[in-house]
Length: 488
Figure 1: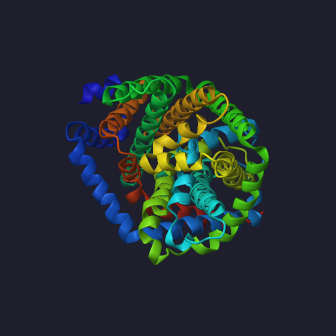
Figure 2: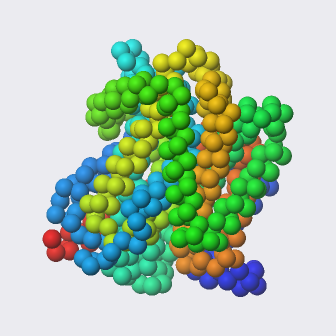
Figure 3: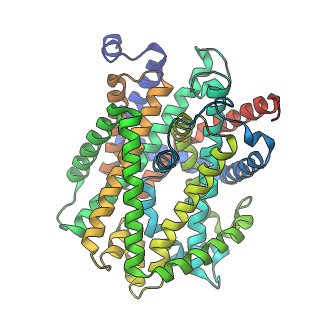
């Protein structure tokens, strides 16, 4: 294997990580059904036993971000008092948002609120405003809790990198040595979580793109060969983008994604009803704020299966993405104060998610064709979005825009994942990027051949299960070092 590593300029410290992920990818490609079923059973067993613990960890992250923002430590600047930000504010926000959520908002923008409305958990049954509660549950999964996990993970890495002069590695939170030694296994766990998390999301995106093509262009556009062809075409795009680097690739594509997303949202709201969307935004946000104390530290026994299938899987999914979203937003946030970093990383994407869901599902809830969309979602999550868009003026154009946004979002997310994988293995040579891209694509191919959205979610969180302990320890190390720093 050494000539292969030398050819692609992969250093020794990254070889163990590559070999481990390559072995897993080979198992998934040769025995996809057996491997995926085994991993899904393992994931389900862990969240079934420790589901409440994941909810508590995410809620504590929200509280910790709030305390740090309000404390004097919020005035400390990442990189020192005289450090200036590398990126403009708009590009910075666009990059952190599109890397952190991306295609998931398109996939679930209609499907999740509609599903919660049709199938509410037991604790929400009989709610006098079921539409508001359905949206509030969606905000719970995509809002403060998700972005607080991202923010605190990114802050820990940024602090040790910019304020303590250490490498931008997960292991750097625990050792000052340039060679992490035994701590290097933490970087391995991080890369494993990245590959699984992005591969699961990638597979879900392919499923939705296929549905969009079928409903927009031709019902005959289906089958595993099309899904694999779509996956490989998108892989070429994000591999090419990763070769362009942070400034020319990720930054430009993130700005494009943000502009296209805003344009699509505005067109949908104008096509349906701005007043209904605004009303849904206000009332559902109020319900979200009253719902948080009910769900932040407890799981309703009567809604246990629903909570495991939605809330817990989502929170673990966000943990699965922290190993690459955390280092990525740390990398682009040099020069920001801790307060600005936390406020913008948590509040702005949460607000954008609320606007997105209320703009799509909030306006849909008032329409006469809601039952048809609801039936489509209950049949298949991927059906709802394009069934909804087909009812609107210029529905075909909106559907094509949604397809383009899906593709560019997954390109941005995969591009960012490759960037962070090479950063954690401390090699950004083009050959190394090709290897990580190939491994991610191999896992995604195994998933798209089975084509099960719920199964993709289970696989996406597999790498996060052991990494959760790493994240908790990392945050603890950061807080310990922070309190030793002179208070501003």
